[in-house]
Length: 539
Image (cartoon, rainbow, N blue to C red; front, side):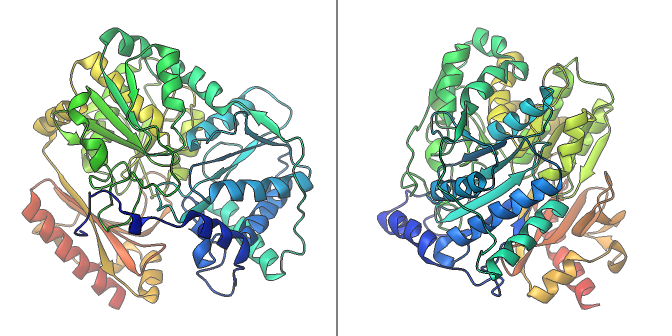
């Protein structure tokens, strides 16, 4: 923990916004340098213009590659495009529109030149494609999510509305790097003229009644606080309050591309992570002013839930409560609809699923794995340990196929209104029934070669038979739900587990671990996990 974690950002912590934008246009990347080439992670291409990792050159090439990809897939409908509040998002949107215009792609920007949350764009794609048009729409979300203010991000969402799969992103990234290597000679760009618009905010907010019980919230009279953390949902919350007549206060409506109002995250950086107590410190100061208080990150695909009795909830805790509530308060949902979780999410979810008699669908890290299940209704809820989730409408049809921090925040209010208990109180009830797990993620140093080896490791490479005094029951390198490669390994016992995965951005590997036998046992699991993984990599 940085000594200033949780403290107000100072002038010296802030980015120079004009310099950041100037670098976007001035610096030209060298794609022979791995740190400067186009690379799509689980949520698109991210980087900073100051590092020659997110520049006009990149966006010209990526957009041209998307144009060519969608043509190869027969996608001829409109392309929905939206940006968040990061400083690099607007220039990237302008660049993308130049390429889309020159290639004859019908692009739809926000009607009010507003910011567009990731879930609002996913909702727009799904709504268009559900309406029975002869063509299909797709979209681009310009956001690095909760990343620091110096970063930019660029993500492609195909016609299913969710994050593109690795086949699509690999093709797009490879083609973009080819274009850059050829000095973007094959990129078409022209000044946008007469760009069409779409009311993302109005359409999304008007449709929220199909997924959230606002009548119950309004009748209860509960006091709700919503902090957009300076992100894209900033103008959505007031419209939600006005549309549904609920007692909701926008705690901080300020938009500042330097995020000078934020408190510093655990490592001393400004990061809009609504699941981090340090980043949410200023929000937490208001916890006693409301019956429920929530936060979102910069593109509103993540949620943070604050209760007066429990403070900021661990994301795993709220996921478990949300699942318990939804599957007992959505009578129109199919009895066969599964509960989706990533394999590094809490085993508390497994125990809740078993108690509900529901099938658990455990997949690798990345929300893209939930897309097909949410589309066809075979999965009613999909959630990640990093505070990202979405679920079906009340009638059992798809809402979004990307993470939606707004509906998870609103669900917290519905839960309080309907049950008369906070999500923290409901989680305490779950621990009385199923035990109280202790969960943590730590990092271990690894070389690039070790990270590459870990990404390809198989369960058979784990030779240990015990973990922290318990017999090992499973060594997983493929997810139980869909058989997809984990990109690492998960080791399971009766009362604990750990998972190890290489970081995509740093020379470390991540160890996720959980124990139902307390903190001391968790420490033992973590220590042995590193030894087990190191032995497997050495062997």
